[in-house]
Amino acid sequence: MQANGAPVPIPVIDLHSVSKTYGNGKIEVTALHSVDLIVERGEFLAIMGPSGSGKSTMMNIIGCLDVPTRGRFSLDGVDVRTLDEAALAQVRLRKIGFVFQSFNLIPRTSALANVELPLIYQGLKPKERRVRALAALDAVGLGDRADHLPSELSGGQQQRAAVARALVSDPALLLADEPTGNLDSSSTAEVMALFAKLHAEGRTVVLITHEDEVASYASRVVRLRDGRVQSDERRTGPRGNGLAAPTLEGVAS
Image 1 (spheres, rainbow, N blue to C red):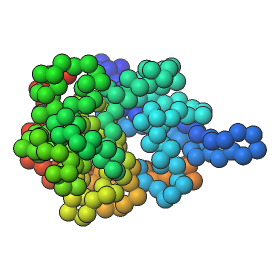
Image 2 (image 1 turned 60 degrees about the horizontal axis):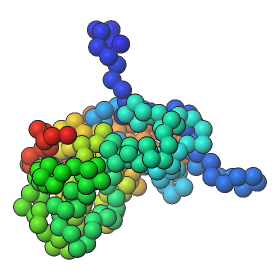
Image 3 (image 1 turned 45 degrees about the horizontal axis):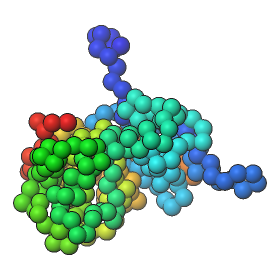
Image 4 (image 1 turned 135 degrees about the vertical axis):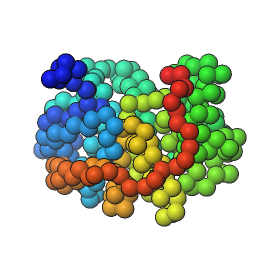
């Protein structure tokens, strides 16, 4: 409880003394060394570091794609150590919206159908899937491109469709791995303005990047080196004005 009697907010991400070691016996490589990191709801965090710094390992742990060798990781109040593989899969499906460098859209399927995909896995009925997917596309400024195939969209539009797919389940965390790595400078600015807009609406965003220009949109930057947190810088606020588009507010969860 806080002093005013209100409950203490649960962090979206809580890493406590997290270490990750690969290999066994004589050949072991420790990718993370006793990392502590708390990300509160509504933060926009960029994780940076050179190759081999541990940022990909941290992303895999945060995304419940891997588990720590030592330490504790809680996602939205859930200690992942207590979950079996089936439960972890449900956490990935419902609590994390993934955005990848390569978009990962199904080529011969419309933007709308791509965005509906997580809802199919959740067992939602077709009518509700369509309503929520259209709202997600509207939220990223692609409401008029719902019936287009990925090949009919620009790179920036494809990534925005991928963001819509990540948002459609209303996850606790939006996790983006080098989301602008395949985009030109104009499309990069477009996609990063979208992330800034989503953050301004209260979304929790964590992105992995090696680009200072991309990280400059975040309100907090954590830099890793040799598996340790080298610096943790908080800024006054993210750059970018965002996109003028409707939000997912009001859509049934």
